[in-house]
Amino acid sequence: MSKTKLMAVETKRRPLLLSRRFAPLYILFEAGTFNDNALKNALIALITYVALINPAFEFLPGLPEAIKVPVASLIFTGPFLIFCAIAGQIADKVDRGVIFRWIKRAEVLIMLLAGLGFLLQNITILAITLAMMGTQSAFFAPTKNAVMPQWLDSDELIRGNALLSGTQFAILLLGTIIGTLLATTQPMILAALLFGLAIIGWLAAEACPPAAAPNPNLKVDYNPVTAIWNVVKKIFEHPEVLRPWLGIAWFYGLSTIFLTAFPNFIARVMGYDATVFMLIMASSTIAIFIGSILTMVIGNMKIWGPEAIRLVTLGIVGVTISALLIYLLPIPVFDGEIGKGTYQDFLSHPNTPAFLGAVAASSIFNGMFVVPLQAMAQRRAHPRIRAQLMSAGSVLYNTAVNLLTFGLIGMAALAMPPKAPFLMIVIGSACVSAYALYRTFHLTRQTKAYIKDK
Image (cartoon, rainbow, N blue to C red; front, side, top):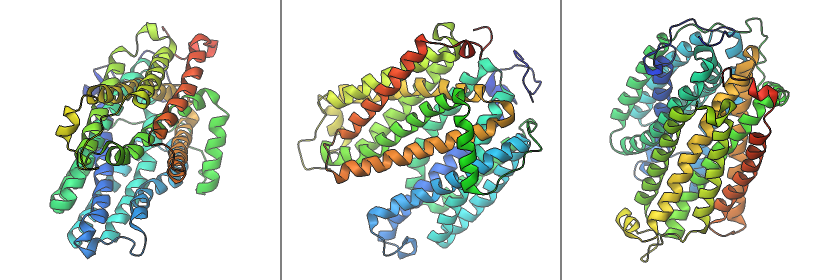
């Protein structure tokens, strides 16, 4: 290996997707990503569409319909936030390969329970399984981020993160579509698919190499409140790790703005139906995949400087310019009845190419922005507390997502212009760009030392 690291796994370097150091992690991560997203969107589809014709899927009766979907999403994200800091401590105390195996064994049982929920048409059981998947994801995220510098060489981290992230976004889109369609038409086929992928993820976890615990004597704090406080305090004591995580938090935040603002913007302002939303989301997802894979190919080039800091800067500046174009360019508005325009109408509009091109460009640059940051945070964290710092990063980006979501709610309450969310992206990205440019031209000696032979 190019550098001796605490807990390093001595394995011969092979292409990542053919290597035991990475291939099992890749398989179990993508299988789990599909199951998380498919189950979440299946539940949302059941409570929004199927419940109208089948009372068995009535969810939280008495609550306004506009609140039910956010509550369903919170069922998944809530446990993630609660348990993430505890999971980070455990991932520093216990062999991470063992943690992966227990996580995926648990997922098999969770998917069996989900199948029972589909069979009995019991929305409560499905909501419980979604909460359990959120908890399982809380244990997976910091473990995955902590183990990658343990299994991969420093110069492989960008490629590894690019492969995971690029495929993840494609899988997220696939999970959304399949979960929604099968939940409303063939729920038992969906249950079988989820269970099958859980089995595949479990088998992949069993093939993972050992990843010795860096801090086996660590005393775990099982109080969620103090655990979160302590890991967040810890990451602020390590600004070299905090900085990339703040960038990652902005990535997830601006992604949330897009996902939250676009459905209503497309329907109410542009005048198109859900097919156009799916088309735009598909274009954006494919573009992020392209950006991630492009980063995998060029990310380790010396022109980008230590840790590809200049590539991060190029990415966020590109996001800023693309978002500004989305804000300034004339949008393709359907001339007929609001919400009735089809994807054919959208594609035939003269303003569509520029609008869709700006959306795709922002997504490509987004992929180029986030992937090096993920590798940067993993590489910089001290091995003995790496998982705890990674869990603190997860807390930061979940907080950013929630704050920006409330910001969008506030904008709607104040009846601000429909393009205001895109202006929020421009302003936020411009601030991040300014700092990234400053860091590009003011590299510290410590920054230059993170990667050897750069």
